Image (cartoon, rainbow, N blue to C red):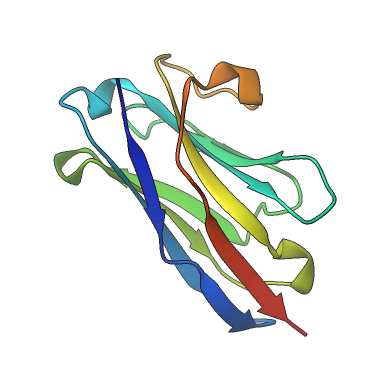
Length: 124
């Protein structure tokens, strides 16, 4: 069982940066691949990026590639999403998720555990 709590969301101007954190409970955090998803108003939840248990593999949605970076600190049971060059279309609730698999997936169904989400708003 893994419990996830996101933090770091807020309001930022276009072109700015934010770093989201996701703190996980449990002793086996290092065995989980971690993903970030987002859901904008009126839209379906979509994949943002993911990282393998040992950070050897990362993948990103095309819409954020080159702007967002995922990292993790297994000693702190925390995964991060560094978001740079933010755009108004990045406005959404951002969720972190955990999957007991070695290779991070891009589908919501790959992930068994979810956080409650944190709001990111980018003003133009």
